[in-house]
Amino acid sequence: MDDTKKQYDALYQAYRQLNTAIFQGELQCPLITISNPVGAQKCVGYYHRRTWTNGVEVTSEIALIREFIGGPRTDRELLSTMLHEMCHQWECEESGHEPRSNYHTARWAAKMEEVGLIPIGITKGKPNGKKTGQAATHKIPDEGGMFNVVYQDLINFGWSVPYTFTLSGVEAKKKPTAGKQDRCTYTCPSCEEKVTGKHEIQVVCWPCKLIMTPPEG
Image (cartoon, rainbow, N blue to C red):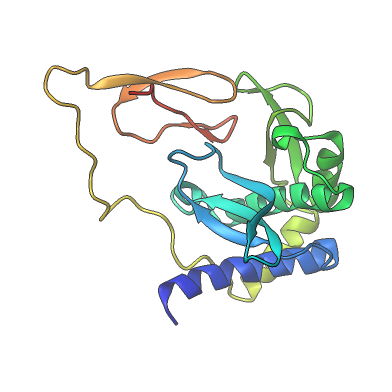
């Protein structure tokens, strides 16, 4: 089996198990992609409704950002992101439309709690005491809840993600030329929290679970 098939088979197996056990198989299987955040949404994952077509049929997408597959994140956290996006998918398929700018609604938050994840609204990089908002993350309970049960079933079956992302072997980007500053300011696209660091590094706003962006140019 080739490497691409191994990776995507594992992701689709997890999706099917979550869909069957939690949504009774009612969600329409989307196109699952592994996305590069450069020039795309700066997030851990996202759901977009009806964005792909073969010329006859149209399907939706759940994207998982490659930098968050492995590294400090566990397979459990990766699948919680998938389920987070599946709750967005459930809401869209139930209502027939996508909330504006992927807003985290009260209906989405209620579904998150039902499936065993704790929704956390974010304002300016910090939990705001709400469960909704433009930026939102989630917490996995230590025990109990449907998500933990399904994840444990997958682990007992021997499930894991075959490949995790690493920068080793990737051609290094050119470093700033002499005379340019070797540091710049990174900004969270949601809460606008800022941090200074070296050029060409990956900086994450963990409260928002978003990749912080360097200045343009």
